[in-house]
Length: 180
Image (cartoon, rainbow, N blue to C red):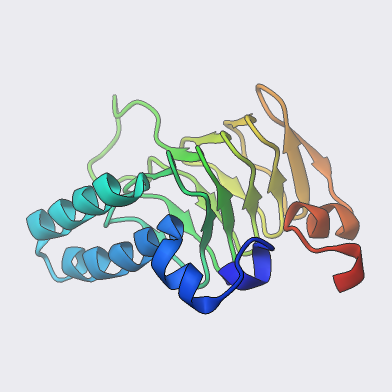
């Protein structure tokens, strides 16, 4: 996934050795298995060690699909009840965060759900138990607090959803015109 979406990735070796987002996802996969097996403390300790090493914090309770790509990584936070679909791209400084626990039942969804193919720009904050539809794009530094349908572009503070064209979606994912 990294080589497909990052023109700066020159080799598999470079991705394996130098991409903090890739390392964070690998650590998440191990910590998530520990979490599901009931080894919650070891899972949290591993996730915190991965955060220390990579600058990316992924709670082991989060549910993450296949081929998540975190570009540059530093400052990304994915909360405990977040759900991330397949082929999602996150840029540095993204938060998939919760809102206040006040009045919530333990175990209730507090974090967002991102369906397949969502792209989230640098510094964006997606907060609360909201859902972003498949192939939506969140602009850099946007603050999203409301649901958005599939194939939306979300821009601003607070973010407002607008319909996205296929070209908009491809551009947000770094697909060059020559690749289309």
